[in-house]
Length: 288
Image (cartoon, rainbow, N blue to C red; front, side, top):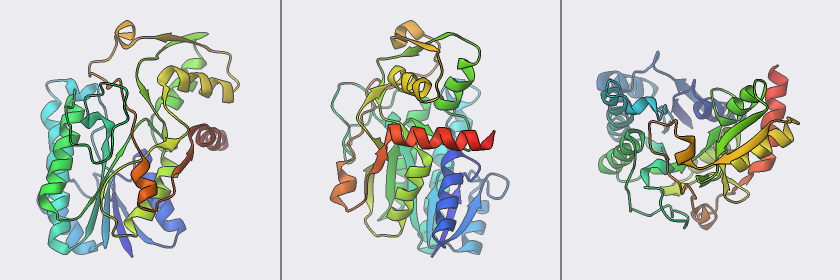
């Protein structure tokens, strides 16, 4: 099997390629230098040349607040919508499987009930959310069978994330204000990569939700556990999103994702997020 992975320089793409290689699966990792996904001809040429059995599309514009800037909106749409459309069409042309990595931001984040994988009550609140939803729709329009996997609160070795930010800020401040009214579950890209490769080796197509196990928490809860495990004395001051007030983009309050479909389809769930965090902190230590 040969798998092409977009966004190889990002947190998830990096770990997906490593997981494929660890299993002896031929992996072709590309980023914008090798394949500009916004250029349809470039995408067609690359996929025709590589002719992968599957494409795991991790590349995306993920800077949620920057996406709200008027000068960036068209750029975000080019990457998240047109880029995804180009890949879906190329996959159709060569008969390749496609997996699209999406987000909890496609929902409006209201209420307290977990969002089910096959829920179609889309109402994104931000440019990022709207463009990721349009990417989902582009995949569904172009292909008869596909994987769409929604993830949330991602952290990994290769890139910026909440854990790294909290650790860096803890070196400067004795206390930090962290929102406690946005609820979800963290996702360690190392664990997620294993699941995605498990999926792509099957024909169990459809919509899925994937985060680590361990229940639903707030960002403030997450920060407290980061500092506890990292043996930091930094105090966490829980605040509401309104009190925090620094974000340009509206964030979903309810990022609870129902992952029961994973078990229904025979996939092993991801480990507890606290366990994932412990392993991640050890990996960060090794890099120092």
